[in-house]
Image (cartoon, rainbow, N blue to C red; front, side, top):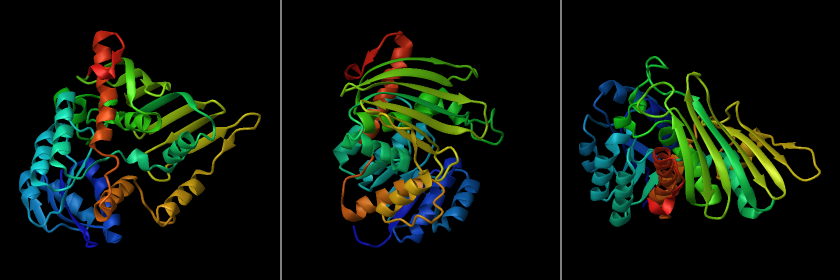
Length: 363
């Protein structure tokens, strides 16, 4: 790739696309990208997206026309999950790079199909797991990889968020509470992020035991609990909740090492008030890390201005996508990473159905 801005075409201009628009706008200000096209059957959605991203030259109500447009260098896919399959396959056929939101598909067989298509086509493809770019999560991974607290032993992770559906949040889209549209509830639609983080930290899962509930009465679950065993021996629990506490969105993770413990809380917003990191070592009082300073240090490491208003971590995900194309380096997180996260979720759903632990190798 040249050093010219990457010309992006964005398919899907719903609510989450507004966060992506803000991220793309900042990357455009950096000279890395330029959004030249947007597609959505709702023209009002395109208008909202364009207002944030700074305008687009080409507008479509059909994403396929956008993929084929000669001025689009790379495609950003932000549609509801059930539309991903046709668009991903079309992008693979076009040979253009792809940035796709998560989850990849409502069902695991389609996830595998899409991962195979990306692998066969050879296109550069990244998945929107922006939690990997959170400085608190990255600091935890550094501790795991360096062994400064010894080997990780186990963990407990709790994900909870308000139900992202119109019945709970007036004016919100409701496709996430529909099994046909989304393929799953709190576990797939929300905690696919956490499953990616867990596989990134501790390696692929080998066995999962899970159960779930449908308290709100939707066709997808709002409550799920899993016990996960990883290939390196680490074991842990994940509890995920979609509830009625509007405005709340939080991940709480405790990791237990041979010579220490870590407690962290994160949100998806940069500088969120929930953010915290506490480290305890033997015979020492707990150390509460200055997360603002940690964030600034990580931003500087990445060559970013620590004083800038970044808002959401999608900025760093889109930045990594554009830089990987510019530098001709592998995409991370890629579709193979997404397959590991989807494997945990799928094993969880199969365990819920059978009432028994499920080996990931049997999927």
